[in-house]
Amino acid sequence: MIQIDALPAFSDNYIWLLQDTGARRCAVVDPGDAAPVLNWLAAHPDWQLTDVLVTHHHPDHVGGVATLKAATGARVSGPAHENIPARDLALDEGDSVEVLGRSFLIYAVPGHTLGHIAYYQKDEGWLFCGDTLFAAGCGRLFEGTPAQMHESLGRLAALPDATAVYCTHEYTLSNLHFARAVEPDNPAIAARFAEVEAWRAAGRISLPSSLGLEKATNPFLRCNETSVKQLLDQRNGRQQRTQAQVFACLRDWKDHFKAS
Image (tube, rainbow, N blue to C red; front, side, top):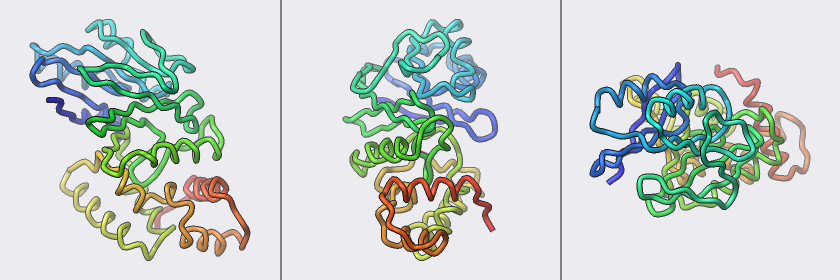
């Protein structure tokens, strides 16, 4: 059995900890800080860290990698086209990697960064997507184009609705403020906002999400919805837009959005 828990890091990062409870082996995803992982290992001295999985090169995702490698000897897997500290295994589109007895398929998902990858475990329905897809949002475009990010999100959205979305930041409530602005009459967004607001007030994290929930409430996966396009027409003037252009308009709006 594999148990997945979140180790909080910095102000709003989560380092995902995958635990094989039978073999007492574990793996972590995107350890931007080594300390939360080392503290967990110190509290569980009979456990072995076997793998470190990295989605992209930003410091809040790789800052702890070299320290963990030196301390534990864990194998470091990461995107082939980015500079990943202490990387042992370079991964690209269509590759697979076995971790804790589970095979993860690699998706290249450029947009947030050009070499960004996601890890998908089909049998368990797990998606570790870094900063590409967020709960109710998506990552900023630091390196890629809107068209690249729109395509990347579309590929992830094609996975089964039950897929659990393990992104790496607690941005859900902030993202839902924007989702409400985009679709003020969407009852699924209103219900999700109320639920997440209660969770956060109680100190509960909002992740993982599911792809089905994202398709119903995440504006960046809803670029073909008439209501979304109509609101953009009201804001920016009526025009014919491709879905990628709708995405670009949404991303630009979100980049400057202030919740009222």
